Length: 139
Image (cartoon, rainbow, N blue to C red; front, side, top):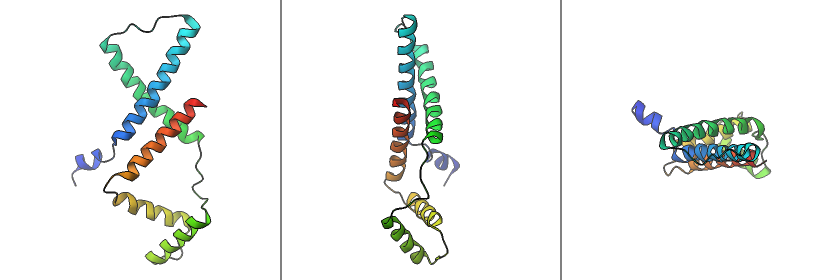
């Protein structure tokens, strides 16, 4: 696989739209607050300003997602009984009984991502990231 193909596979349309949407909502909230506090009319702008706002919204989306990763902690080491049973089957299947739950999960995740022909894992992760951004903005 070429470097261009490897790099482009890391960028999902879902991710990019998620960053842009979350950043745009943050910009709209900020514009609304400025309008409420100062009464300044923010509706008149040109194409160049719109392009700059798109870039700013995209960057703000990244910042919101980074803050969401810090604020919303995932419990990646806690598994239900059903999940633990599945992870035990994974250990037996691969022949590594000394793997802990996290190691077994990580190996499964890597395998699923490598074989994700339809892109469902990437889409799910992008949606999950988008929802964390929405949650942070709405809370």
